[in-house]
Length: 314
Image (cartoon, rainbow, N blue to C red; front, top):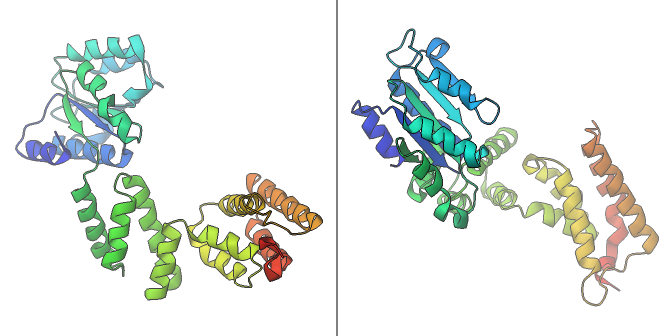
């Protein structure tokens, strides 16, 4: 069943004794888990047991299956990460669970790899093994993603037009976690910018599409004075300045390998730039407090090294 069907059955008072939540999005699995928990009205402090495999022995889980609830009608047992146990251990656990006649509610989660080809057969094994459990497919549906995007935009009063929302739907059609992170970036951007006009929406779209770091690298190697400004505008989107170091290095290598030896900067200049990038990369790895300052100084000091199209040849 899908999550919508799960909600309907729980709403009608049809609460099973075993559930198997399968999907590639932890957010959706946790949401389905909360739906079951809310329907049980279970007392969290006394009548909920949580187990994360393989950190806990299967024997410890089995020992709790028949434990009588203290303040609730039924106990809730949550077993996460079935995908992390394999072979005989998983088979034996499934056999025990299939024989379970407890009145308590057992909810198990099985995380899939985020790969559409892998999905074709990957969920058959857990559903076949845990035949006594009700299977809940927690993978996102395209229509649900569209509704979620528009509801989030409306709820948070974000100034995003249909083009931007269509982009988000297309780009994150199978990645709810990534979509959630992008909305956090949008909110942070709006908080810093205050308002959002058409130009800023275009800039934001570039950031979300992951184009700006390449644009900053290209501006740097072209010797454009806008390189530092582009880098500063990119800051809200960078999880780490390591992304900028990587983009600069890749662009230097790409041009150096281009047809006709397009990277014709002086050897000593290029070596000095690469040494600075290596030094910045070390600071990033050691969590230095001066990473952003180092990057700004790097852009200021070196952008002129490629003026007059030196990186494209003379």
